[in-house]
Image 1 (spheres, one colour):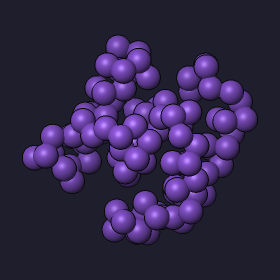
Image 2 (cartoon, helix red, strand yellow):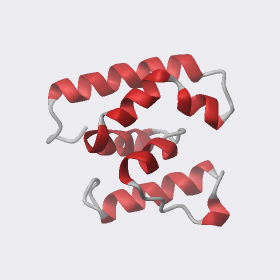
Image 3 (cartoon, one colour):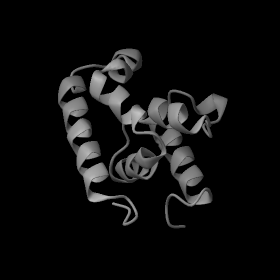
Length: 104
């Protein structure tokens, strides 16, 4: 986890992440996955959540793209890669490196 993120923020994120994952493990609809309260709460954490989400993506691709776009107002995923989990993950990780959220 990024060292500049406070322990309480990291703990809140981890708690919300764990709740979200447990409630969505059997869902496949991105809209349903993204509307779970804990996911929306992560979005509500704002920019502090971005490096934590990107760190999650480095570990395991998952449905974090909606949250990243909502928080950053950006979408580095090429139109032809929309819906491709691996390509979307790579696009966001590259964005994270270019914008100082991840080491190069």
